[in-house]
Image (tube, one colour):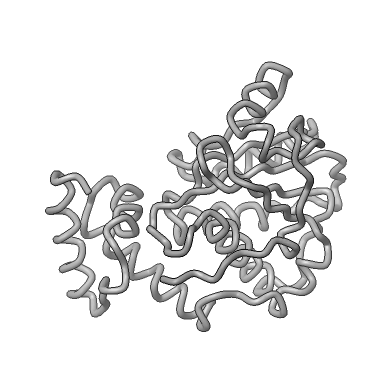
Length: 243
């Protein structure tokens, strides 16, 4: 950890304690994610960290979301977890044409946590460092109006921003139909500027080439110009974390 950040990290640990919580279980890389998300403002980062602790213990009291808690969402087989990109980030693909606005919103929220947790865990070798990131691919090919779920998209991005800060390396949107552009404009109003800067909408062949090069053919499925096979997230075995 850079010496220039040692002061902020120490101040943040003290601020969290003043709020009645502890950072004992968390290393500097985890705390740095919150500091970066709140431009090195220790008070704001501390409040964000505490909010995350409260949210996590409320929505995920057992520490993780098990598959039996999200059966309806898993049944659609719409989320795919690939290998690591060229930069070492796990690649998660969402096929929106298999998604429909959920009737059970609590289950959907738990599902978002399940898929983000599992994607991050797939990049961890034994023990979590705390600064792991992921690449998301939102595929809107063959979607109809019945698949449109602005609320679900907003929930996903808001969870990333508020509870998984600095976990998103990049998000690629592919095959966006014209009718969805207005929906995306509305959704993007709920997304912070720092997150929007990580989102790339792939619209032409040149951008697709960069998309394939950035992720790498070994991780990207054949359907997207790579050499890999699509793997539904529930079919991927992720090692148990040590920490």
